[in-house]
Length: 279
Image 1 (tube, one colour):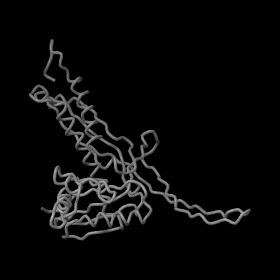
Image 2 (cartoon, one colour):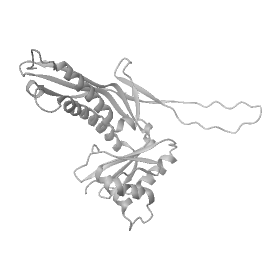
Image 3 (cartoon, one colour):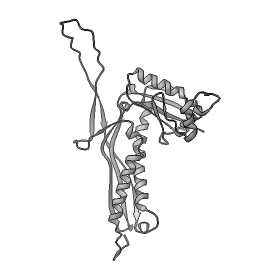
Image 4 (cartoon, one colour):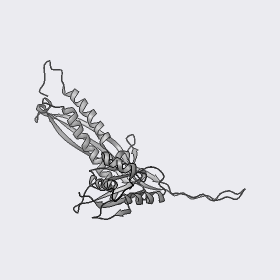
């Protein structure tokens, strides 16, 4: 950095702030990380993990004084292979001396890149769910969420459920909730959606919107309702930021990486919803 002499500002101090901001952004901006099952394999050798799947077994009535019959439990497994993703930027000496706060700005940019990649990779798994609702060209409806919830509960999902939809699909849901002609008895949920645009919890499903849900060439998108056990992410290295001085370019390269793998864990614990994603 072209600062020397008695100036106390050093590039090393700036890097510390960039790393902290980038790591915070990557962890905070990823929506999907908090909605799926995580496996931290940072301390394990190798880049793959096998996740066992246990079948459901049933209990039976017993006659007094008799031993229950043994039940064979045969497990299957899902193999998750981790790979590296990343991006880099060049912080020039001139930019480091300029106005603004390059530590926060670059940290946010790098952290967002990793968070977006993680979310996009997990959301791409929605299309693999065999349970399906909705149709291309049709708007998503609140009834789709109720049907999805009923499907998952019938598949013995007992815990939390989440829905991730594109913002344009979220608009259709909100419009349905706030249409007093079509929904005159929306109550508190309707009022909340009208006040601040938050869809909230519907049929026991926490509804989130994400621009990382991709839209196809026909303006349709695949959203999903799922339990945490439906999808898995294996984290070998959640976030790492390295720096390297490049004298010929008069700047410092900042390289952000993460090492992880994603996979569908339990197909019966997720339902995809194909719907229009256009305003």
